[in-house]
Length: 173
Image 1 (cartoon, helix red, strand yellow):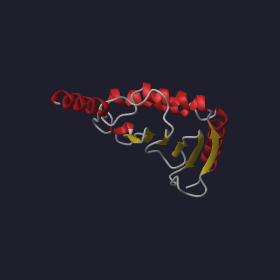
Image 2: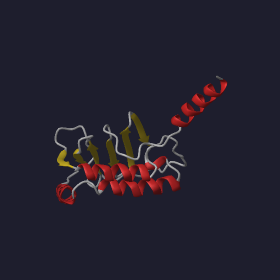
Image 3: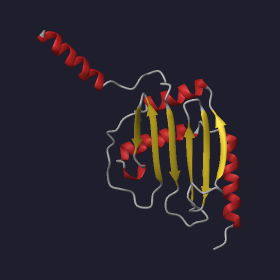
């Protein structure tokens, strides 16, 4: 009886330390927020990438310092195939983003602001802003952020860059 108790206890302890599933869970979704940091208003912008479990995505882009919740933000919808969703999940899992033990260091004043929230297997993982992570953690997360951005179609990024350039050209104090 004691042996069964200890085996059960060991099984519970090991399952609590288990890595996230290698296969993309059905509830996998992502919210990635980014902003330029402290810049003059005409050069500042922010965006959020949202991906739902079914692969439906949206990029919400806000020029200047207007909040992303404003009705006049620039929006672009897109969708990812199941294979692309699998690839994104594998990227995040392989990059060790599905965890909560982030190492923080000296905050970067005026640097870019980021926030990533990933849901998988009923758990939510919050990746702190790169401006508060240690240099080694920051480098890992910045590389993975580029990977996340790459899942938004290039045409959408091109449109947003053109609109941002026009915003900068038309800006008046």
